[in-house]
Amino acid sequence: MLAEKDKGADIDGKSVAAMADRVLPALTESIRLLDRQDPAEAGSFRNTINVAIEAATHARKGEPSTTMADMTRKITEAIVAA
Image (cartoon, rainbow, N blue to C red; front, side):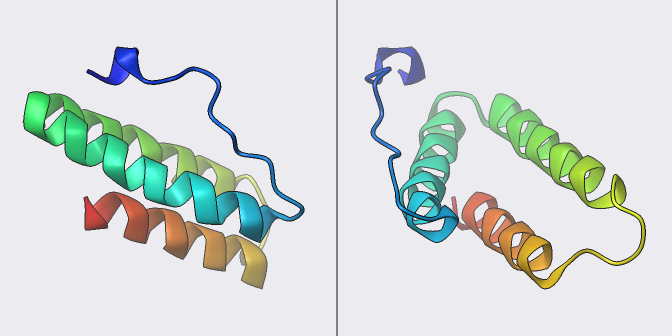
C-alpha cells in the first residue's frame, strides 16, 4: 500500500534537475501502484496533478518560461508513463 512507504524519502539534490531525477520516477511508480489498487483513484490523482500543473502555468502572465514548459512536460510524461 502507498501508506506503507517510507515517509523519509530522500529527495536531496544539488539542483532541481537532480531532485526531478528522483521524484519523477517515484511519481510514476506511485501511480502504477495506485492503478493496480484502485484505477478510479489513480485517474483522480492524475487529474489532480494536471489541475495543479494548469494552475501553476496559468498563474504566470504570458507564456510559460522554457524551464516551466520543460518541467510540465516531464511531469506529464511521468504520469502518462504509469
